[in-house]
Length: 178
Image (cartoon, rainbow, N blue to C red; front, side, top):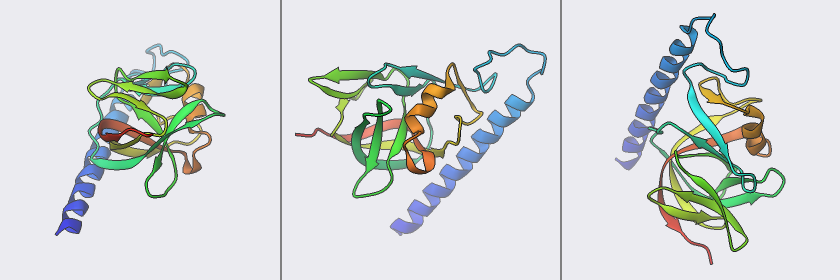
């Protein structure tokens, strides 16, 4: 029964994602070609992503996520890219993260992390469950996103095997380290 319920939830999540992608793609395709666009934007009506901070550097979405998947892991800091990642528990490939709107990077007592509205501070080493959805980025963020400097976002993904990105909608069950 539990497996059947999870399968239904996954199917609904896939359908919602497919419909949202189709809607965004249709919107982007119907944009008047003569409309001026910023050279660094990927879609005229896309979802806006911003890069916040420098150390740590985080990607923040201006849109709400409505995905239904969850990922439990430990927040880690990549010293090369200066970005935060989520390493799944008990094992698995790390994910780059796109944080919810108004999330800010933090550096507290030498630990990098984020301050998430209605959740509070999450620092490297903390465990958390994020509800959202996984995307696979290639050389640039997908075309549904509009971002001033896509290379900054790509830097946060470059060391992630398979370039897996988890778009966070909600954070649950934060367990502080130490």
